[in-house]
Length: 485
Image (cartoon, rainbow, N blue to C red):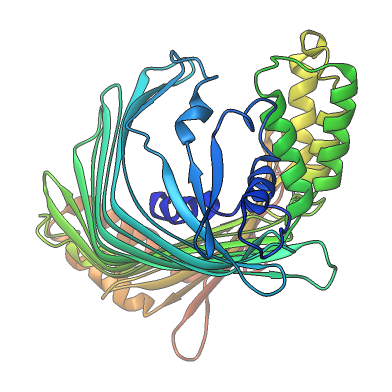
């Protein structure tokens, strides 16, 4: 995620170009562009010099004095040292298009006070940042853009927890387009980081070192409510220091939130690490590929966020395991988890019914109940589209779902389908391992009992369809195993 954040930061830094100005390069046009760039900033910042624009031959030079954004922030909350002005250039093209380019570096350090926790001390160093892209003023995003970052080093220390990251280089490309509805936009970003190294130290855990030859990411965001979100961000920046807002602004916030829903149509992110090594005091483990994926619809009345992890070509490497258990280390594994039917729209609607002008009158119990509106009917459903693992002695897949009731932990229903290939080979391997560790004899007996309930295919694949009702009744392949409680 940190890699994606760094890449996105370069794009967002220059993605604030506002309404179009004529192609003429002059002081007047520079003032118009400067006004466009600052129109989303809170009152007072536009005149503070946080953004300045001046003609520079056939283009405009844009300077961001980001340190001025920190002047109104309490130094007890956030301090950033070494924040130098960032420069980029915008050249007008035909229509509403601009060519934006820049070359910079970054070396900052500071500390941030974590609420009810220790202070976070951080350092970010980017040896060089180059960016070039075509910005479309009519849709407020880049039609295309490319960024390159070299010599990335970051550290973060919070109490006894420390994370240190090094990345040789990162290349990314972004694209954007306007949808047929004339309002929402689609944006995407792809990129690759080379020679990634991360060291993590935290209390109660052994130190860990992660290395990868390269890490690739792909982000797709469709149907983004860009104009509405820009208005919402502008409102938030204007009132961030107010503490509380009056009734009129409360109504304005309500209106902005409702117009911005569902924020986006869909989000899809995939991050893939190749030749990943994990170093711990006991040795180093290796995975040929590690991938995670996050997918989600917008904040609708039927959202279905899904999360997945896949590991292939896994090897314990130099980590020494008991001989009896070595054959059971998975070579490949995949987990997919989803939560269907989440009603974010209802939760947001309930939360917006509270009066932000009178926060002291908001009851915590009612606030919690509003948040729980995300679960229609008080039911929490978790889907398992796929859980699979494979080694030299087993190959199985599990899919299904689980449903429980809020506040009623005893009311749980389960529906699972289990598939096992070469099951006799698995049983034989466990029996062989039991000769080394007799405690595995019980596992061997359990597997043989399970086979007795299985439905077998001609190729030897074993199936178990397991149903557990809210009342506690259990069936396997339609055969009643246990009655209701």
